Length: 124
Picture 1 (tube, helix red, strand yellow):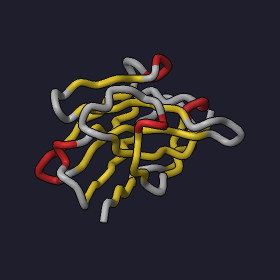
Picture 2 (cartoon, helix red, strand yellow):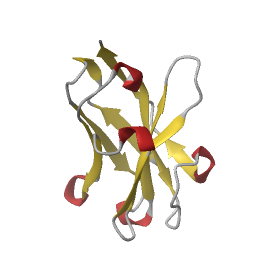
Picture 3 (cartoon, one colour):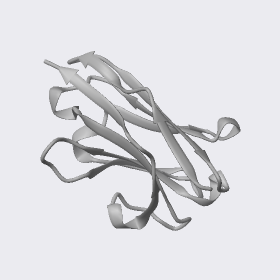
């Protein structure tokens, strides 16, 4: 059974940092692209970042470039999202998701498996 389990969300002041973790199981870690998405109240879910395991390539939403970093630990089957210089507009539920080997975008439709999400709240 494919599972993605997020953790690391919480309440932080603007300018602070959080690190989200996504532990994946039930599939071969290196065969997938892993992405982070977020959904704020009343807004559509948007892609934040993804890591293409086949070549280590990464993509970022323009508004998080230079502040967020995606990485992975193969030994732990875990993908991280380090979030620095957080802003109130980063407040959302953050989800990790898995897409096929050749996926290389932040389009939701490419992602087949989703975690339950973790809440990130940034107070101003």
